[in-house]
Image (cartoon, rainbow, N blue to C red; front, side, top):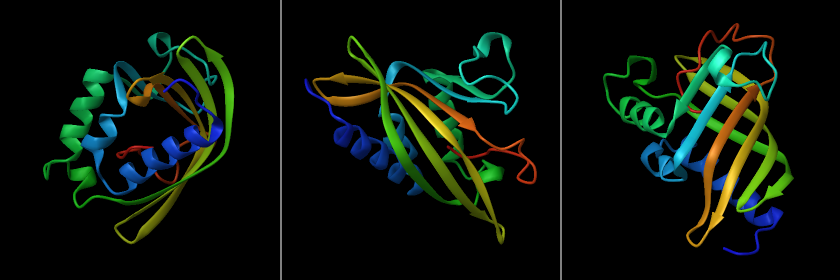
Length: 161
């Protein structure tokens, strides 16, 4: 994939959101490179803060992300069994930077989660570091930055943002 434009990136991000919404997490995991990272920093740290010395809700490398997906797909994942009903809305997609084979993309998200008769709204911005290769786009890093003051009233993030 030599020439990637914003439309290609938007299509990729919309497909990623659909995989999560339809609980096709093993297929979603295939979108990530072997050296990938998935971050959800706490709401009181800077968006570019390193996970090594800051509190993050989620700071997974590719191996841990794979373990998370395996766990979420099991009936023993009590926080997500039965699973939440999710809808991810992605907008304001902007190419922030191109460097070598990496494209840094910013976007805004709103995620609706319905479970146990309650609907919660999570909102914020995503920063994706995408790699354009022969087999299309893949995710080297995804950082979901929540724009709320905290996780109240939701209290937790037991699903994929």
